[in-house]
Amino acid sequence: MSNPSAIRRGIYKSRLVRRAVRWMDAMAHPPVAIEITLDRMAGVRWNGQGRIEEFVVEPLSPGALVPSAIETNIADPEVVRKVLAKVCSAVHATDEDVTLLLPDPVIRVFVQHFDEFPRSRQDALPMLRWKFKKSVPFGADEMLISYMRQHTRESGVDIVTALARQRIVREYDALAESVKLRAGVVLTSSLAAVALLQGEKPALMARVADTSLTIAVVRDGVLCGYRCTELPARGENLTPAMLLDEIYPVAAYYQDMWHEAVQSVHIAGLEHRLKDFVAPLEAEFHCQVQSLLLSARSAGLIPDFAQPLVDNNLDGLVGWMLHHE
Image 1 (cartoon, rainbow, N blue to C red):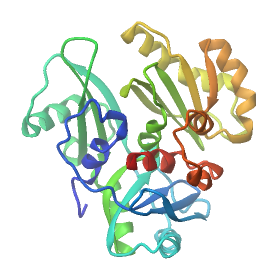
Image 2: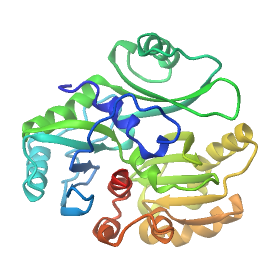
Image 3: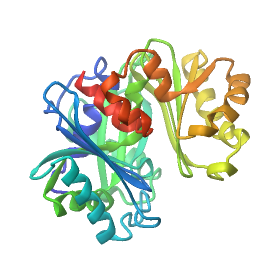
Image 4: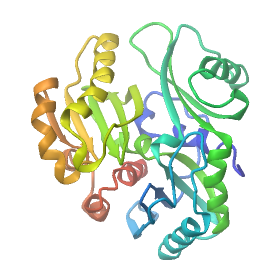
């Protein structure tokens, strides 16, 4: 990885934790962000005032990219590079730092409580490598690690840790280099999207991308729970019961740890099928269930100029845009 701390800076820059983290890696917000998903790439350039200057979405052919934490992601490098080159041309990106939003399965995220946690990174990294060596399907010596401290209701400290296999992140770093870009910030789309969950009350986000489901619980700017898992079905074959089976354990864990229930549920990735899921989810969680983007828009978080991102269901890029605020 040409910039080995990019993934670490990515998690520190999350707006989600601005009130909870002492900034150790302050950096400029790159003016260009590129979101890479299973079936498309989207690029945005912002101007100095944080407004969208240029925006483009380009499709990716099926099978060209296969998101994974352990196996090769870029199955057809030439096809993927050509699509990225088109995106870069449209947003006039060359020889500069960019933010890369990667598919959620690429980076594993954990929220863990520690009674005591080292202050120095030199002491913390070995502890985290040991702690998570059985939680990821690759060796501790292959880990890229990002972590941050959070407030907790108990004594001790909560640590959010993001782990990735070095050679997998290197694939994306090399992809950026192939079009004369530098990966200045690297994080997942869902870690960017959690910025859309604002307010003091606990909110649950469930974000579907093909067969990948990412669930996060946020309370007053603190990430209280996070899980990325595989769904048993995709598209029209996905049922509310299947989604509930995956969401419920995270909501139950939050309730057990924080002694309160989630008070809103925000869904992304279901688009026109959302209406089929609202009633079953509301019956289970006894709270309002809404589209992640529409609820953020209703709350006044998304400015009118960001409508092209909303129209294309680019909640990761919208969340990252809020870091300009």
